[in-house]
Image (cartoon, rainbow, N blue to C red; front, side, top):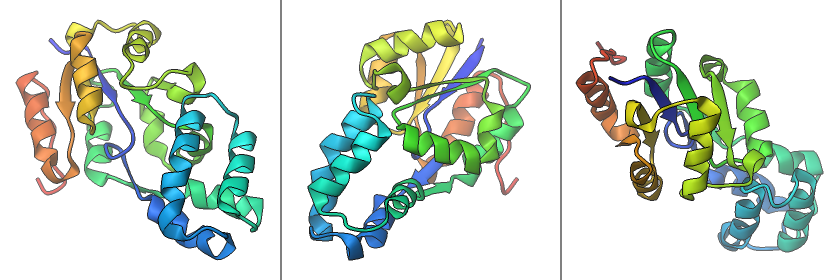
Length: 205
């Protein structure tokens, strides 16, 4: 019997595209756009793992890529990269009140502040574990163990949904039921839930 579901956010609940950020900041940068994401990847990882603050991240980004524009524009460009995945939003709405739902995501304070204010779907979740807050990241086993305690769930009765194979593998190894999500194969998730006796309908049903 399934007693809880844990959702990832990126490419499960929200689609994201860092190229949007590049288009917005390119006119203010000394570095060519093609190199920016590669150069920023280590800083992004440090931000999402809670090793640096939002302000330090923004300062270091500006220095690293030669950003000369307004700070608020840099913040907005970094945040406004998301679109809702309507199929999973609809699914979450159907599940609300039927089974407890939680969030486990590698994310930053800059991103979580934005998407929590922009998308009401997050009001349907009982609690969340964000990597930047707990200074742990998927697929480290410690963050899954932390989430078990924080949510009060039994992994053998909990379904974990993520879009990355490494995160799914780590969750399986600590005992969770898992599903590797793809927006293009959304019905696969519906079928998995059906095997646990949970019927949900698609947008076209």
